[in-house]
Length: 406
Image (tube, rainbow, N blue to C red):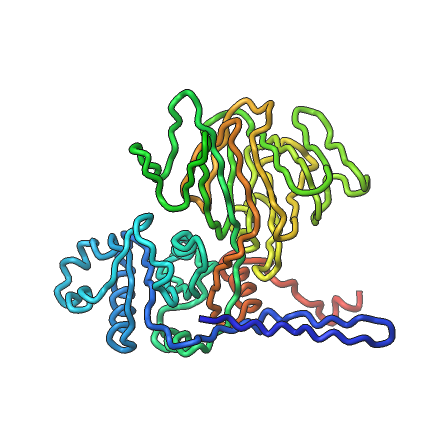
């Protein structure tokens, strides 16, 4: 698989003015080095409405295109599939895998998702390295990230197999969580075995445990079940811009003073303290998810950026900020924090963060190639209008001739 990016690097010098030709997002196209042979089909579990589309798609891929189809083992354990005798011949041809046990990252040419946005997030979580192109069908509730309708799936899948499709590279976050072992037995959530066997993505070093994640939407740090405000420190490379304090203390701006707390694009930070219910660190793709609900701006997925959005900040002047992609963030509990915090990654693998633990976040070098229905710009604005009803209002009537006279 190869993604062709027609980067126009033609730079001309005319009348003492540089003219830069910026790449058009619509120029990103999907092509294949060789015809794809294997496909991973991800289906929303325990959804009876998806059984028929799932069966029709798999039969089409196997019988019409002679493709190898991978599915998660628990998908075939659905009683409706187990008891379907007509589906038996197709069912025997499946290749199956188990999450956190089987590595299929080098065996998949592209992915097809059936469901809502959660299926795309789940597909992302299965690939901690390079991700195959993803084609997502809107068979869930919201569908902001699933641009394809299933009615004409045969022709649409054929176009993808032939390489006739636009693509958008959705940046992901590379996250490392470092936890300290303590005298009291620490409960480590989500897949850490009591016998000391560590799943993929976890490392053990001296008295610390390191966990690695690839995140498509956002990393959320919140106060969990505690009634106290969460108080976390966020470190970035560079100079101290501002420190946000709660309980009546002011926001103290540093140089340049006119930036204050209203800076929306920050190139360098060193330390920011967040007395709030929590903080969201999101990709441009995640800017239309939890971050949008918390008051952040919506950013097109082609924009290279990381968003930092406070959740209910205990400050009237704190605003969401946007930092360049590639900076490294480090989040820890503030020394004066009264309680621990909790972190989740795309809504999964939720775990507690204590004093001495840290979360490091930067832009991943492994984006998720999302196949477009039309092109990256058209699909994004259509999703804003259809799913979020962006700027939808009743139009104002024009003046009549009599009203214009007045």
